[in-house]
Image (cartoon, rainbow, N blue to C red; front, top):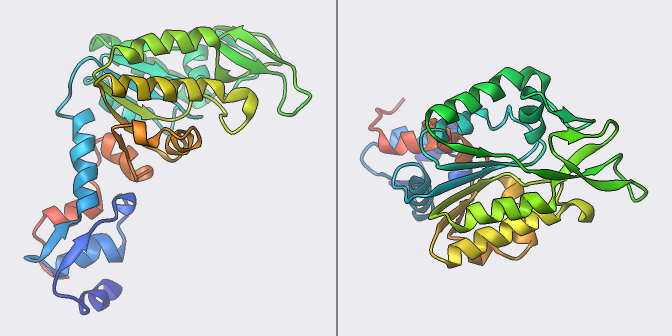
Length: 275
């Protein structure tokens, strides 16, 4: 509070344009605004973020496809819950797939799994079913017995991965499977890669999904990409200019998508007395 008060003494107006830190209660963002009850505003970037994210939360054109990837179900469980009554198709990729597969009785070999999230994974599937959401898992996966240049790599059915092998990317059938869904979309949200795209042997799934999102955007869909790894992938494949909007917020976008009230935004929108 003291630091915020010191900062406030330097100005007559306060504008917060840092969406990437809007989920943090920092003195320079969430607290300082209380010293400008009549002279505070969201910056142009912040307003643009909110406007574009609203297109995948409230002002939605259907069919709506959400592509959720990354390593862990635990980091995406809340966004999955919040999307369950909004989307038409949910595409799940990345390491988090295997927690869902194991929860349903599949064989995942040595693939990443969160044992403590198996019941939550089944809960998400049940909620999606109740809302008529089609949940799409990759038909096949690119699997490896180890990380390294001498690894044995093969394509496996995602539901029956051999012992000693782990799924590290979506396979060629899954690429086609997901491309068909994405190309029919009018609204697309993408958060999280399909595999370990930083390694050349496991980048093709993420690259092809990125190309499909770009192609669907060109055909008229609204696309929003957010999250550090997803944005890194879009930039790696030089497709940022072919996406409707690339969010500057990683954790901030994720929490906003979860329905969390972000301190940095709330401080601007609320009239607060100086502390």
